[in-house]
Amino acid sequence: AAEAGAGGGEAAGAADAAADDKPAEGDGAGASDEAGAGADAGAGETEKPEGTGEGADHSLVQEDDNVAIEWHSMILWTMSSFCVGIGFSGVQLIGPLKMASTFGWQSLQIGMQMMSNATLLTIVQLAIYPRLLKRTSLEFCASWGLLLFGGGMFLIGQADASVEWLAIVGYLTVFVGYGFYVPTGAPFISSKVPRAMTGRMMGLNQFANSGGMILGPMIVAVVYQEDAVLGFVTASSLCWLGCLIIFFGILVPTIKARQAAEAAELIKHAESRVERFKIAETTEEEFAEEMKDYVMSLFKDRHWDLHYHMARVVAKELLDDAIPFLPEHGDERKEAINQLVARFGHGPVFTLVNGHVNASA
Image (cartoon, rainbow, N blue to C red):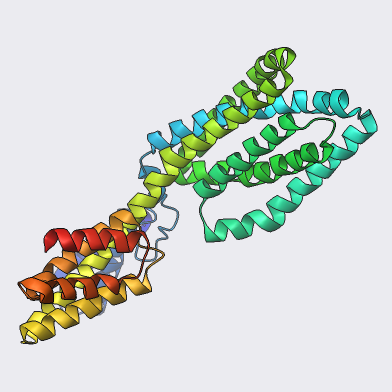
């Protein structure tokens, strides 16, 4: 482009000189104008940075690099991994000891049992876990997996020579729960941190789990030596502690946040519906009846999704608009309230709505 500009400048100078000497000859001047235009275009192209044109591809921009780390969830999940590491490594040590000392199992029987457990673990992770995850969430799978995990350890500890089947059921429960828990770690962490920090946070989580596996055999073995049953109770309690951390620290707040968003969306829709009712110039009785029908339809259609706090929000926002139009005094008002509440059915939603309507009335 620079050479074209220089060439264009020389051509323009020569054309100007020729025009001064021979004004009648316009061909040279026309050529010089085209060359000058080409030079200007070339010079303009040199000033554009690469990749800034209209056809530039911006698809490689990593938008999630600006996502903030959810430290609360990450710290709780790491604490849970540490507890699970202690419990799992402990039961790996004392489980075979229990089977050998209590039931007289030999190495071949223990090996077959471990092979069966690994096979079950594979089936759970490939066939059952994906279907459960589609219907629930990572936090749900992890918490319920740890609940089964600890429950299986507890059953193994309670088994004695007369109920050998209880230990086998316990082992199967352990690995079903472990199959639900293990696959949740990586996707959970990747959903809570920016892509650039995913590797470091996974490493931190694995470090906590490995630390628990280092301490687990020493802690559980010491307890098992004093009391075999207490050794399994210790391991199962640590897994249950991990379950409680995930369930109440991560799962419950996540569910509440999602339901609050759904409730806000319902309220927004309901408010627009109320405004349409008012604009339609209906009578007070017609408005009250339309509002009641609309509120009932919301609860009927979404009964299983409306939990306690969502029921409070929807009942407060919508029933407050319907209650003033009910009869003011006596048995007629009481009967109208009873009819209004009865149409909500039974269960927790009924109880909340019943309390709110009567308090407002």
